[in-house]
Image 1 (cartoon, rainbow, N blue to C red):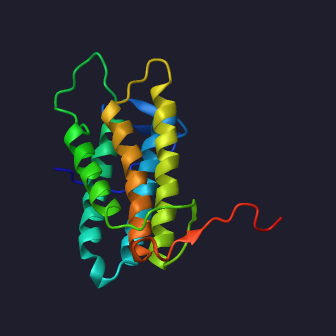
Image 2: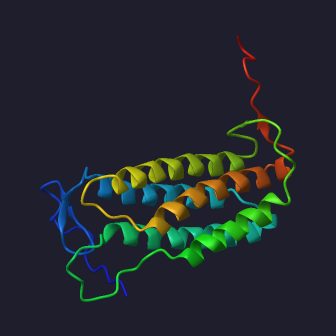
Image 3: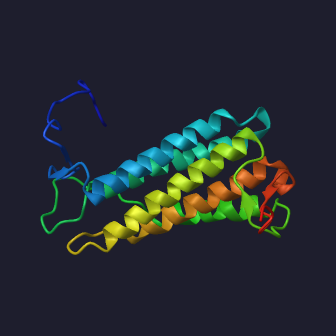
Length: 193
């Protein structure tokens, strides 16, 4: 259980932050940026949920589960694997979490109008917020992949897979709240030349 008795500790006043294993890193470190951007994606999903109507309770439940999974994912990133084993079992994203979100993507995609063009972020307020969350999730994914390429760093492959699926799900969810795709704003290439 996590207990936070004091919000400010002053330990970060030197520009560093503690990882889950106690190691301190600069706040601009790519690992810190990666899990910080996952947190940002989580917050944007929270805003999108505020725009869902009563008819979208199923979607709200899925988004709530994704938000919880994103905290798991952030914990995974914040606790890098090292040769020295910690005194506790670190929280790791699992293949089951990836499979579950893939199932949700397939279920929601089956209800959508076929996609015949790229779409512009917009439509309903909920769809616009879900598109915003999608772009933040993609940024988090890019940072996670960048982290995985840093020599000496390790990233759980399920983290990359899950983050990729989150943005896919948010795209499908945005189309879903746009009347199943009927309210999508289509891109018209070269329209304003």
